[in-house]
Amino acid sequence: MVITFWALLLSSALVGVGASPVTAPKKPFSLNRRNDGWPYPLDEVDKLEEEAISKYEAYLAKQNTTRGCTLENSAKRLEWHDMTIAQREEYIRAVLCLQSKPPKADTASYPGVLSRYDDFVLTHETQAFHLHSTPHLFPGHRLYIWAYEKALREECGYTGWQPYWNWGRTAADPVNTPLFNGNMSSMGGQGAYVDYKGIAAAAFKPPYDYIPAGGGGGCVTDGPFKNMTVSLGPIGSVLPDGVVPKNPRSDGFGSNPRCLRRDVNKYASQVLFANFTGALIRNSPTIDKFQQDMLGIPEKNDWGVHMAGHYTIGGDPGGDFFSSPGDPLFWFHHGMVDRIWWIWQMQDPENRMNVLPSPPPADDVVDLNWVGVEPSNVWDLNDSIGGYGGKFCYIYV
Ligand SMILES: *[C@@H]1O[C@H](CO)[C@@H](O)[C@H](O)[C@H]1NC(C)=O
Ligand SMILES: *[C@@H]1O[C@H](CO)[C@@H](O)[C@H](O)[C@H]1NC(C)=O
Ligand SMILES: *[C@@H]1O[C@H](CO)[C@@H](O)[C@H](O)[C@H]1NC(C)=O
Ligand SMILES: *[C@@H]1O[C@H](CO)[C@@H](O)[C@H](O)[C@H]1NC(C)=O
Ligand SMILES: *[C@@H]1O[C@H](CO)[C@@H](O)[C@H](O)[C@H]1NC(C)=O
Image 1: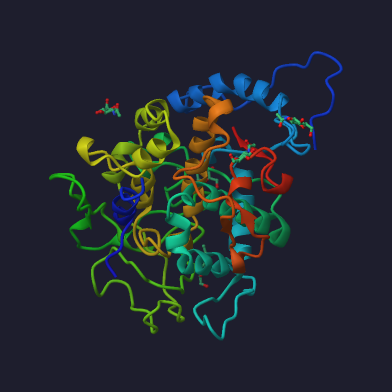
Image 2 (image 1 turned 90 degrees about the vertical axis):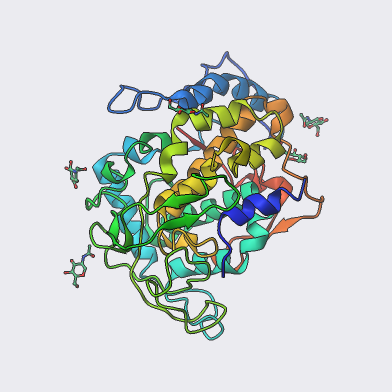
């Protein structure tokens, strides 16, 4: 199938517990992030977050909707590079654990589901169009990441929170950063070399009409996921025919055990420097423009941070529109998407906390079936502080 992340750009173009009474003056909330400048000084996106937090705090103080969640007691999702080696290793152990647990999905109908981790992949594959259609990209993935984090904690004993990937920190040379360098405390490295041209980006003018191959594309041979078994799919592979074994079933849900393949790609990450993300946040007065620009701006030859992040990971299943959560880096990338949506919301909370692209009808529901969390009305997923019936209670630092 030739549906890639570019398809999103084309299709989206068609659519248009009460706070406790305050008794004493409260100390302003501080993100208290690691900001000692090593080795990453605050970038312009971090600064947009820092500058908005007091405005957001004032907004929250006036709401009835936070259901006991406050900035202080919220979970703090960390950037990978700000985590200690021990924290990274604990996270990696939890992911490997989830990949070793039995699935919940019906394996008679979906024999490709080999582990609990695959329940998440299957859900994304079967709901790919629903989860990516406007307006579900943001709220649907917000719930999806939260559910994954919950499974890591409750089913695999992880004590931290889902890390995110600040794209700007790796943009210049992703494969030589602690996220991608193949170290045992990284999320695994580059794939073995495959001879291919790259990924077509038909919506863009030359030379931006394809992303040149990044030097990988084959099996990941180092780091903690070198023995990982990918099974579901491929459904929308971006690698040339013959590289990835075909799934025995035409729908891609058959058992197809194979290695994790990556093409960690510096060309794709050219539009992931912090100034691109900063411009996206600053230049999007409406949620529709914010989503549209995130998905790419052909006139400016800007591939858009959402797709650029997916293709910086690339390979199989990372570059596969349907199966991308099968690469454990998916959650880092969509964590950053969720983070910048939140930072965008905080710039003007009175007008931005309660909007979604399109917008969806009042009765629109996201149901992540095999993932195993309660379905939710999309309109209860717009707030990470108190949304989802109060179960959402996290921020990014
Ligand atoms: C808070 O709740 C009260 C009583 O239910 C209601 O009158 C008020 O409009 C609510 N305020 C906000 C900001 O939702
Ligand atoms: C690789 O990881 C070890 C700990 O597992 C760490 O001490 C070392 O600095 C890391 N090296 C690189 C290049 O990230
Ligand atoms: C991969 O499997 C081999 C063979 O069982 C084993 O020796 C090695 O430690 C494993 N490596 C990782 C990172 O899981
Ligand atoms: C970001 O900075 C780079 C390098 O200075 C520049 O080429 C690019 O146009 C900038 N992007 C935006 C959106 O400002
Ligand atoms: C989310 O959006 C809906 C619809 O506008 C609104 O009713 C709800 O209050 C919003 N949540 C927050 C926290 O603003």
